[in-house]
Image 1: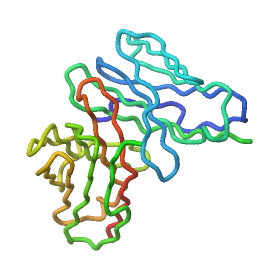
Image 2: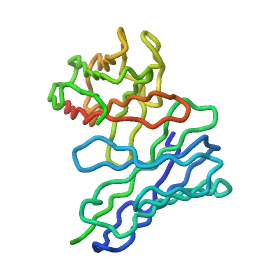
Image 3: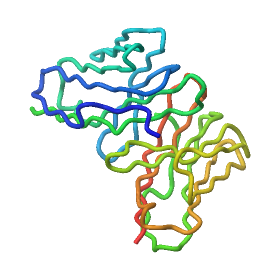
Length: 111
Length: 113
């Protein structure tokens, strides 16, 4: 079954604005990861946050994790047209060998 | 970019025919995965491998089989393709099963008529 669910399903913003998307998961996790997928391409890993971390930064990306609410958020600051893509969260359960992906958020950045 | 090659990248076949998709890696990673991606479903795990000749089922394994005779190759076989198996198939590799990130191939688009 699908572990992670993203919200919103789609997001359209102006270049320079921030984009925020959320992910909820169902069971206790070891870590949670975010991936980006450009149209027609494979997924690319963006950032990993462990269950004992609350916030992590990588360039213009900020990820938060709230294990009490079983949720995570990805913030992209000062968005660019090149950020147009689908973004997926993926969670790895405590005793699980696999990553479970959500259905993704499609982000469109308008120039 | 991680050295992962999927073949074929596109295939159209007819219902009932066998299909084999190949994933080849040059990273010497132990773990390999096959996912399918369908609109509204994200990625769903079909099968994975944790070593040569060591494989296990994922959440949507019915109708699929896999083989891994050497570290670098992971084959996904549809014994008798059905229209419900029309999808984009992604291979992924990982060095560490428990904590590590996945590196994905570019995908294989399969259409079953």
